[in-house]
Length: 377
Image 1 (tube, helix red, strand yellow):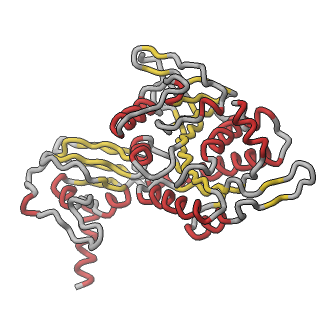
Image 2 (cartoon, rainbow, N blue to C red):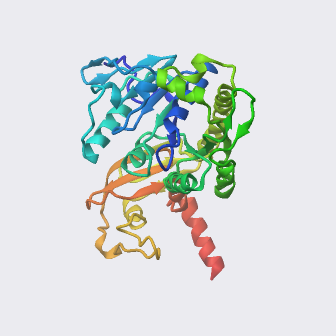
């Protein structure tokens, strides 16, 4: 299998499509956005990460098609120029998924690591509603380039979307922006728009949360009927208000992702290595060479076991941390930090890159901190 491009190694941008609650049309947005981006000339994939309620096979007209499976590896199906994978492709049409969370998480890992996604410009990940295990697993394992939050205009949807947005912010996943779906009904006879579910709530939420507003999508029967037929809207027609809205959304998303990528690249380490002495050496984009010893890293852990989330008081007792403690594992968490395991068994801490930079122990940084302390005295 050495010549097979597995996992996300050749995926340039991985983008989560999320919502706080169900029923806001997130999967419909995911499907049509993926097709719209593909029609703009990009290589696109679509991962249906809703293990318990997969909908992409129906929307892409592949309910009765099974993916190739060989030696433990899956090959995604391709429909309308988009490669996609879903739990719905692996089951009989009417079979429910009756799994506990660990099994669902295992399947998510397989979708990320054991699918021949190949070379893609964009992989859109259609998340289930909520802020649970699936969202956190993907945020930490898929190295997300960003998240698009889908909401409808009414306050009940906006309140839950706000929580979903904050979840991504807390794990340092960039917010590409907010999409207001079902923004208004446009009459096919007179062309008049009626705000059935109110209007403008998504834009107000974007202003409140200080994130981009990506645009509005109409409540249009043609979107529903295309999903029912398993043929995305832009495959059926390019000449409608709804089709133009999705094309415009695709262009805005591509632009915003490029802007975020430029910002992330400026903060993301060039390399991370563990040297023979067991310390972590970090090469930053500005050529700064940071150094972190196991003992100091362990004392600076900010997980819930080591720091009170309400008061900020440190809970770890320095006297109980061995001076000769060692690092036993270092793994990336998304594109924002590292998960570090220590020889005392502690492995729940996540060290964000901006936090690592602040606690750098290189000679230059140590001298600078000493000078600041002297000045303050």
